[in-house]
Image (cartoon, rainbow, N blue to C red; front, top):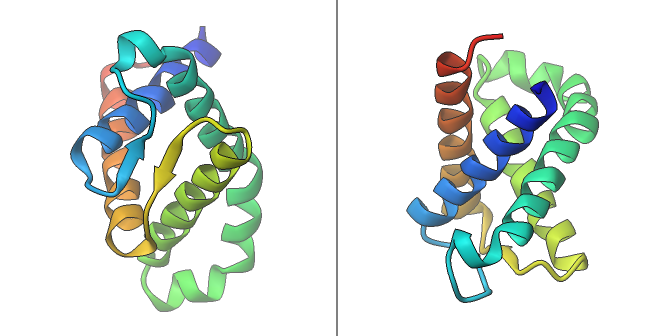
Length: 124
């Protein structure tokens, strides 16, 4: 059940970010009803990147995190979103993040807020 909630949350967060943030797009026409396997795959990629790559990058950047009072974590989240976009491009999924400033930064913020909101609603 926890895996299913994690998967749906990541997919929902990516969908909301693509809907709200200009510069984050799915190149396939149609909505979530038609392209849900693609959106689900991008949610899985984001989850895997956040689970495997992000902890390593966070540990290696502890001095920057301390120096910026934690704001560098936002930059790390944006970089993970860009990595997700690059991986989705390699798998020809049609998920595109245009640039770091503002698309990735705003997208990371939206994804963080959606994940937080779902976590507060769904208690373990």
